[in-house]
Image (cartoon, rainbow, N blue to C red):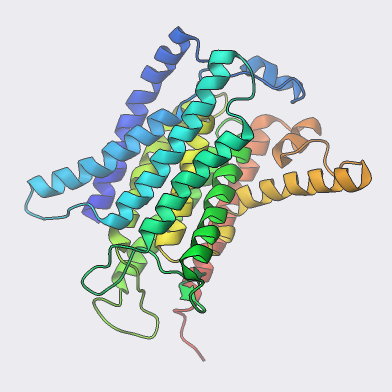
Length: 357
């Protein structure tokens, strides 16, 4: 618990103090947001707002995590970083670098499109594949690896799908959720608040899995998770960094996270889902990004089949903008939906511990 609090506090303070520095630096260098011409008219006022703020989130989260462990190591307790946490941080950082390249190209060439879709997807796949392959290595003293070659909901279930099938499945999760958070990042503070709800859930899940670990007491509902406490530390570090960033990203935003932040955040929640053995539960915990992604799929698919649109514009948040909703109204209501989804996911996670009648 001490590491969780330290990681969150360090990351929060670094992000809170570092974001205004990034705003000044990026503004001075002209690292401003380009706006799509086909987007809502109200977005033209945001042209030139500093972007790539995701760099602050990633750096603050990394420093928060390692700072917490360093503080513990210098004290009376010994708490070295674990391989599960390092793999999730690698996934976050790797996808953040892909997003950074995408953002930088947009800024350098002054256009709304950065990396070509193929290059962007390749970067996500390479980083994701490395994570997936390494996640089934490194057994601990109880022969538990960061992940197993099985699918999971509240825990692993069913037979092994093999390393190839598992890698493909994990890549689907990583690419899907990194792009889902990217699609959610369309209004000031929307993606930050939605992802914060998911990260808060994983702080609680990691704590519960630690308290009911099969390595301390075998039981019918114990968890075979390699490093649940350190995964909660990762979630807390990223959550702290995100809250500090949200202080400056809330409407009206003074900085945007860009693809640097959205891909990194999508990666970290996907990595936490894989390593805590809650892959399918993430569909509920991150229900808002899933809903927004579904709106894009429905819009594109229906238009190709009929030549007509279901929504005035996709992703879904822009549909409500074009209906006349105020941006802050959309953001707050969508935050409420994100919170309800996270609460529903946590409720399902705990339900198996309810006494059977």
